[in-house]
Image: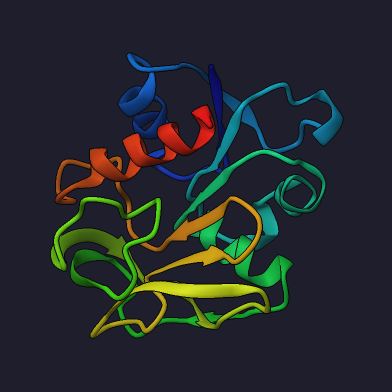
Length: 181
């Protein structure tokens, strides 16, 4: 079992790898690697400063037939790749955000109806891409988590890899379980 973490130049990408390395084979990889060179059972698109620095992330989303979890910028990239809309949010810096689960699904399996997360809303998905559904929302953003209806593509606006996020490890463990299917 191998899950790769795509480095989108975010300050927490190494923490994603650290959070899963004891459970699966993992590496932090450049977002410039061609999709055909990626050999993995799953992919995590990490956070980063801007969509224009997301490298080949859209190619991974379109071309790879493996589960993909987008975290923060990774979710925003997922949104724009499939026709959603991303705009600057009202809260730019990292802050505690109370998330409400509206549909449990695989990625949020076993989580409570509400929990605290650590998130930046410098940018956020405001129009759901076609073929996706909302899994969680907050008073800051109506689309805190989303999932593709037919493909194993998941996005969360918050950072499950940081200690400030409640149930973050469960989100990552749920993604590992999805990849094992």
